[in-house]
Image (cartoon, rainbow, N blue to C red; front, side):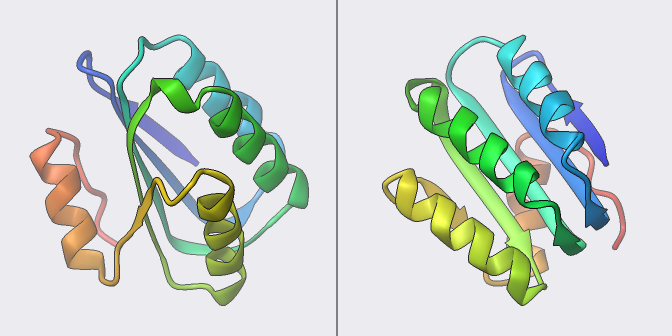
Length: 119
């Protein structure tokens, strides 16, 4: 798991393989340390599965801090990850922009001056 960020509030979270529940604490601590108007990019392209506590803790933090979120983008391939993101999107009132392709996600990340790792 990797987290990159800019001073302007853009954050790129990249997860691969198995999403460990311990990731939630690292991610939420980074997000909490930043100001409002966060633009979050979740790169789950190579994420295969995850601990349910990761999904629960991240979704709960996002709901509690909804007023701090300007945008939330996600990309993934795994059907299991898709279900988690779609459920979170319902809980967040449709805030998550789910990208249909890797290229559209990478374009948004690049526009936010964040580096995209090659998949």
